[in-house]
Amino acid sequence: MSPTLRQQVLRKIPSVDEILSREEIVGLLRVHPRAVVVEAIRKGLGRLRKKVLHQEDLSGCEETLFSFENLFPLFQKEIDLQVQPRLCRVINATGIVIHTNLGRAPLHPLALKQIVEVAKAYSNLEYDLALGERGDRYAHVEGILCRLSGAESALVVNNNAGAVLLCLNTMAEGREVVISRGELVEIGGAFRIPDVMKRSGAFLREVGTTNRTHLNDYQRAIGPGSALLLKVHTSNFRVMGFTAEVSLDELVQIGREHHLPVMEDLGSGCFVDLTRYGLEKEPTVQETIRTGVDVVTFSGDKLLGGPQAGIILGKKDILDSIKLNPLTRALRIDKLTLAALESTLLLYLDEQRAMEEIPTLQMLGLDRRKLKSRGRRLLKRLQEKLGRGFQVTLKEDVSQVGGGALPLQELPTIVLSIKSPDRSVKSLEESLRKGIPPIISRISKEELIFDMRTVSDEEIPLLAAGVEKALSQMNEK
Image (tube, rainbow, N blue to C red):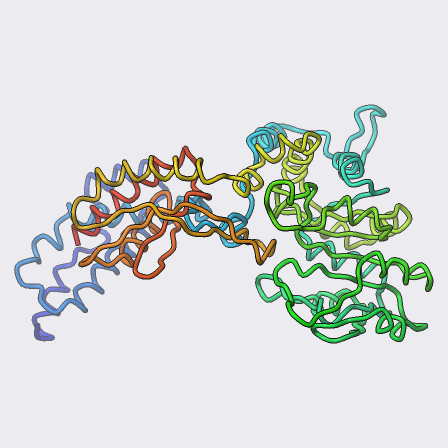
């Protein structure tokens, strides 16, 4: 198309004022603020203008392109983008159970119920009902945390990075923290232990090598400037082969000999011995506390299966000083997090119930029979909808734990695979990702994969309907 002809076509695009006068738009103005509607019209017309500028051949489609029947859905979509929340529920079909990018742990229904109860009215967040006076917000979870772990005292902050920062600042500001070089981990989002330590005001003292650290490495490093011995559980990686490390028991003994506190960052803390359920060994919080360690920190939203939180457990005298640190207020959790965390922790009073009902633990423990049954339900629905252009099969695969936990653990699973000899599964993946609700899958060897481990029973109809709608949109293009 010549530039002159293209300019003529561009002049046919209606003005904002012209569109505002339409009866259908007047109806939108009764529902939405005028500024939202005007912005939607401007953006919709902007998209139309780009299409005119970039489409090679516009002959025969001008009338349809500029018809109000074509424009109105464009404006409605732009309004929805403005007024609908960006944070939304997604269906996780990736097979990664603790998926950091997808919000980590889904919460138990009791936690959700308690959040609603606490959120919709006033609460006793910092009010002692027994004494009728100001109370401590952390008291709501300190008792149950100490009961489950065996610790003397407990504190909860906004996340585990915050917990580590707070502890280091309280216990070692201006002094040295001794840590094995092999434990200077980096967690998601490029947050590194050395960086957190620097911000805390403590000085890093590395000992040993990446793969081997011995008792005498710590012994030689301890001096007048030493404030703390730190151990970091390598929860998101493993060093294999020619390795050596100092156990927490041994480190605690060194700490006692030199009158130095010992702290361990567990990363992903767990109250259940996962080996009883066929999973790899992960140190439990109880085992860690029994070593006599002074302070332990871990996340509330990984293997624990609760909301995002940083949990600090340990000796009362040290926890008392941490609680008095001004940073504690800056890192404190709100009433909704407390409500969800307390409800989740109470489930651990019955370990079997916790394994069966806390979503994260329940997904980790799913057996092949349950996964296959779920896959067959989805297969039946999709075979009726996909037609001959796609091949749909169930097959065996492996899931991942994710979230920086159990990095070597492979969970045998059942996945549903979609492939096509003449259609792009990448286009289908994109359409599903942009659907309502968004469906997050993965592509492997030109196949679209839905892992049954992370798709709940109630999500099967939603997933099937999402695939049908995505295919319909692809066929329209």
